[in-house]
Image 1: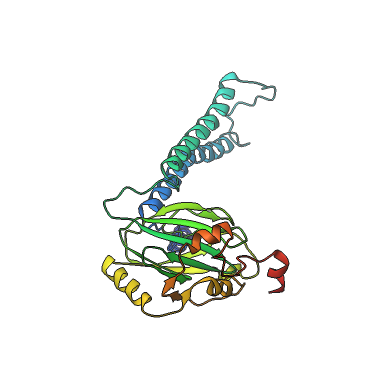
Image 2: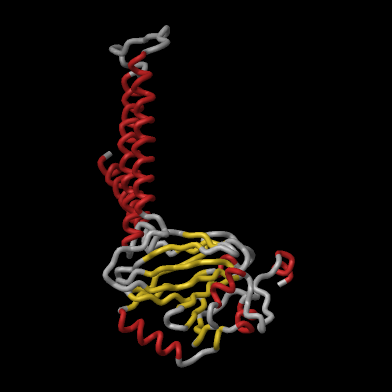
Length: 296
């Protein structure tokens, strides 16, 4: 019997280790203040629910054990219909659970409003994001460069993202940095993120957008500020220019797309994408209809 118990305990430990090992590179392994705060909300809500679920499970097992057929001490009450105290207990506990979990989620989500800037003594980095079919365009307006499927940011620096879509609704998500946010054509959404540890993190689309959806992934390369400056200078020295015709080629549906950079970006390109109006002398169509997307 003892040997069987030891095997069961070992199996539980191995299953637990395997389950926890899958938490890397996800929301339970945060690398920034926003993701860490979101994980704390998750843990707080889980703790509140477990405080109810565990006693309920134990009470269920206790009732089943006490009222088993072989227990002669248990009272059999076939005519029992109503108990006010039981009603209060049964309804008050779920009500308190809903209030506590709702309160934790509301307060936490209010503090983590995506539009709320991150308080920091470091000057934030501005990045403009465009979701395309089926790739991501990142424009660095202050550096005058752009990248495709590659996001490089300095460690410990707040990043102010402005996001839009070239056509189909999409979703920008870096699990280890937090705050998934939608992108929509003709609209600008905003989110503020920060990475506190150098590394390469996984970014993805969390909204199905067609046959190339599975390839809408990008790497977030978090580097020291000095390395970021060197990277930006290197990007300005090579690569094509992202102007109207180049954007017209880029916006065409394609996947998978290897990461690459643009050494320069046409002025106000992001705002022209949002308004779907390019420079008057550049006849470029900013988006494709659903039928065109299927033909591509």
